[in-house]
Amino acid sequence: MKVALIQLNSKLDFKYNLHVIREYLSEAKKEKAQIAFLPECFYSMSDGVNPTPHLVSNGNEHEENIKSLARDFGVNLFGGSVAYKEGNKIFNRAYNISRTGEVLSVYDKINLFACDFYQHGKIVKEVRESNIYSSGQDVNTFDFQKYRFGNTICFDIRFPNIFDSLMKKNVDVITIPSAFTRKTGELHWHILNRARAIETQSFIISAAQVGEHNDQVSTYGHSLIVDPWGDVLLDLGGKNSSIGFVTLNFDKITSVRNSIKVR
Image (cartoon, rainbow, N blue to C red; front, side, top):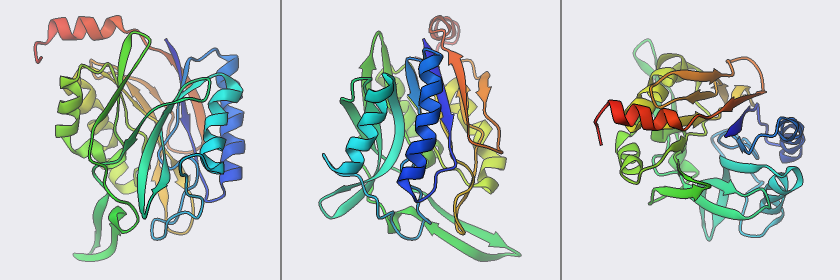
């Protein structure tokens, strides 16, 4: 199964972001990729203090824009997240959309980012995603062809209980769309992705944001595809938006699970 991994430097302007994504999806179509994976907040990146004004909701212009990405290029879009408004709440919601534009399933981020940044022993910045978003409640899996996919988002990667739940649901691929900070990314990003792949004996596909997005937000990049043995199959680096391709060999899942008995 050939897949495309897309790394973005999303801005607040959704029209700019859509233009960039369309360029990459055109390339994915030419490469005959069956699935393209997008990062966290691919549609509109806010400053992390206020929500984007371009909130997706059921059937609105923004949701239709996202569904048309899959439909126009005939590529399944899995895992990328957006700011989604439901009632008086906003969720960080991952979409899984078929090549015909059908929403197959969604996942609302459970573990919202919370971090204090220190300098010389003093807190210089506090980040609380809960100031914007409400937490999701349920893990999500869905089947595509012969395989089972599970969703997580960014900060979820630090909570192995979610991945244990997905493993018990016999997932083959776990998506981790992300907008990791540069500082925490340098320290933990590769280690965490490889650990989650090894623990769950699944493919980990982590499309990431990269670079300077606004005055408040800069991200680490290094979008990754990691196989069930923990080997990094693709790393898009930490400098630019880009796209890469990998053909997933699902026989690797069988060989790893037959070898290491953790299930």
